[in-house]
Length: 149
Length: 149
Length: 149
View 1 (cartoon, helix red, strand yellow):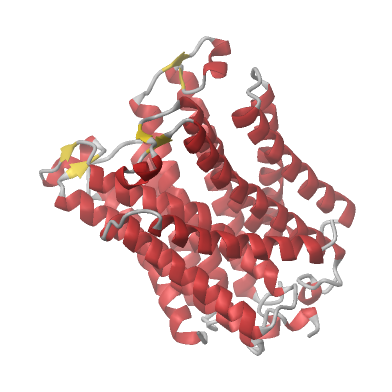
View 2 (cartoon, helix red, strand yellow; view 1 turned 135 degrees about the vertical axis):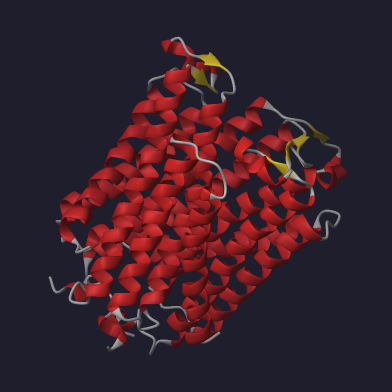
């Protein structure tokens, strides 16, 4: 494929990329809602001006757990969004690329579920982290092998 | 519009997108300056090697407030930068898209102003957060409806 | 150059951009490995379910140092990845653009080395931070001057 036409909806890999970027954006935004929900449920806030509805300034384990899951997303999802775009220019097959997008997205949703909603024993969370992590490494290495420094 | 020509300066929506990406980058970089300024003003640092100018290792409320505003930006601005690019491929009108970019950017600047410079009572900060948050959701949902999974 | 052909591998600046995006992704992923390595070495974890291999729940200075270096990367690298893409549309020369990508990437690798592996006295880390910081500002300002708001 001419690289000029990679970033076109006529390219099914690109349309698929945009779909999972949209879904991962929803996933990231859900983390903010989840933090707000836990802060409300546990009545635990961090700023003095946030106590106006009766909550107290305190550190709560469940709130911190959601915040750690959120930070883990920030460490992994925005880099994935960018490297997956670069990966499109390594000319991957639709089958491989679309399944990597799906697997990454599923692993991140499940990672949060296991980390911050229904806490499960390790190594469940570690495995889910590594699925997305290896996919990101794979795309980055494909990029290093394809592009000119 | 042919989707091949969306990412062209001849497309006013794309040029507008690039302008607000540039402005939001400036906004993110200002947060680092603001943190440095507060650390200097309150003489509060976190690393032993940073005490060379006389500051002490301590946790300061005003420094932490800036850092929370910065983290809130990191949770919202990089995802917006990516989803807004995807949103360009949903074929939005210039009027709608450009105003969403402007409103998002303005809400984030004001959010920091209210959170970390001139602290104001809630729900001011919550409202400013939700303006940017709803715009991001809107773009993500448009993406989910437009692109193929 | 017609702006339609900027995002093509036939454009050496774009190929170079994609290479450094790949390398910076590797760099970000290394931070997760470094955190895991320090947590294992110091036997210091944060979640109760992570103690299954014998580690304890505690805050360790070396772990926190790596985490601060990681957060500093998150504050600077994803914005760079996006603003550098916008910068491609300001029509920079290959020589200037490619060297800015190289310098930014080198400064971030060295920043982590000095911050979290071989700790060196200030202002070493500050200088390395400012190299990447100024490059990001430069690209953002070029963007503000080029694109239409």
